Amino acid sequence: MSTPERSLRRRPDDRRAEIIQTAREVFLERGYADAGVTDMAAAGEVSRSSIYRYFPAGRPDLFLAVTDDLLGELHERLRYAAGVPFSPARRMEQLLAALFAFFQDNPAAYRFLFRDVWAAREEAVEASALAARAPLAAEIAGVVADTGASAEELATTAAGILGFALANVELTLAGQASAQTAWEVTCRFATSQMA
Image (cartoon, rainbow, N blue to C red; front, side, top):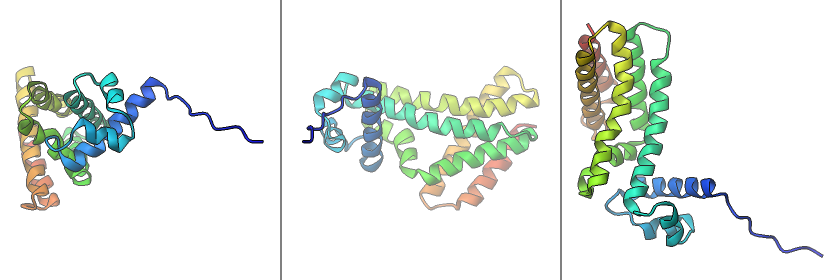
């Protein structure tokens, strides 16, 4: 005689992580504007009330959680690339290669992090777009700091390099430049700013 299988309750942290993963898939496939809580509930096979239990504001809270998830992954790649035991210029090249590779591998992530936020017209979501750049700029600043730049020079140089790099990532994703050429030009620009 067999016993009926008992449904196992998931731990709250596991359930939350599953919801974030589902939201990530839905957002990256459809974009922020075209993805709702109902879509995520259906994709994750959970109730809407389960989603609201973990994310009371719904879609904006999910956006922030997915943003943190993506940025955590990207930041880890950048940190690893910037940690190579080379000169600052070579470390910058490695960091920029990791940035370009991440978005070449995940073009929808670029759209989600840097384009969808402005279409959302939601204050919390727009604020996250500005915050999204901070850990990326911090990794660049860490490499530039090895050149002896002042704090003000460090902040402006890192912001400038990041802006230049993201503009070139966007060109590659739009098919207006090859990834190799865009990366090489970005490296030349970045290392010239470190002198």
